Amino acid sequence: MAYTAADCVRARKDFPALDRPGPGPALCYLDGPGGSQVPRAVIDAIADVYTLCNVNTHGQFGPSQEVDRRMDAARGAVAALLGAADGHCISFGQNMTTLNFSLSAAIGRGLRPGDEVVITELDHEANRGPWLRLAGSGVVVREVRLLPNGLLDYGDLQDKITPRTRVLALGMASNAIGTVNDIALARRLTRAVGALLVVDAVHYAPHLPLDVQALEVDFLLCSAYKFYGPHVGILYSAPGALDGLATDRLSTQDPAAPFRIETGTLNHAAIWGVHAAIEYFAGFGSGVALRDRLLAAMRDISAYERGLARFYHDAVRELPGARVYGPDFSGGARAPTVSITQARRTAAQAAAALAAQNICVWDGNFYAARAVEVLGAAECGGLLRTGVSLYTTEDELRRLLTALADM
Ligand SMILES: Cc1ncc(COP(=O)(O)O)c(C=O)c1O
Image (tube, rainbow, N blue to C red; front, side):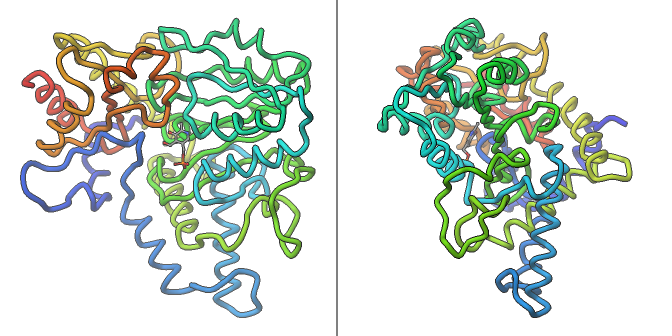
């Protein structure tokens, strides 16, 4: 069963923000890579926690046990989304960046001067900065080159992985230009030298199916506000991977996974919202098990998003003075995110002109600063990025194309 334009029109009614009253034409949210809108079910789930069980976990009384039950269910739902064995592999945090700082610090405590960590030029700063910080304690940080075509230089990756490599921190999909990276190759290379593989799937998770067990990653991070949920960071740890790490934690804290890296009291209401977002997404698929429904929904929505992104990609590159970055849609996996520069205006000027027409797109480097620099787009003010979400329509993309053509 495909996800069609008619399904999209129906789904849009689930997102109150898409109906936001205000002056001018309807708001057109094409900034999903920056953060997606949330369906009513997520808003209701958050309110539900504040209404029914706004208490701390692990108490003896009913509402506390209710919030325990919801936290367990949320971990289970995320496990189903990622293909993890169970909820014990799922830790929550403030956002991906904060979790990755905690993870890199914990791993870093076990490294010695001269040990090597490999990062890439393509990655979001959230999967570079936390690892670059380890250089201060004598760890050697190597960067895999980004090629002008927007793909990683896999020859360079092979060269940079050495017997001293302890960690490869790699993005799964670029939030700036949509490139999808070869995680299977990364796993083979890291496995051969006994290094950990840490994957940033923040931009991948909303668009393409994940199977952490098939990928055999040690750690994978994502962020629920990119897949129609609230602002919650998620860390997947392979069974046992978290156990030996010297995480920042209190002596009173449960040292077992998944709690070992979770400091303080979590945002229970938002985490229950993550559960609702996953259930909402699964509602587009059929099957009995949550994982099956999620995979079916992901397959269909992914094809819809790719079709729209390809339509926009192929049309925008025909505009005079426009240059499109990253791989095109003729090959394999690619996120539905398309970035351009224009000859006669900066991305910020274009984004401001579009904003005046209620078209929301992002400009700049989106924290993928090194990638934008390597691609030569930093001096001209960065990229103008368009993201396709499950609620994006072809009409919205046509509106964007017309506005760009009229500028
Ligand atoms: C690819 C990628 N990685 C990491 C992050 C950081 O995520 P968070 O905002 O949850 O820290 C983002 C945010 O835009 C992203 O797009």
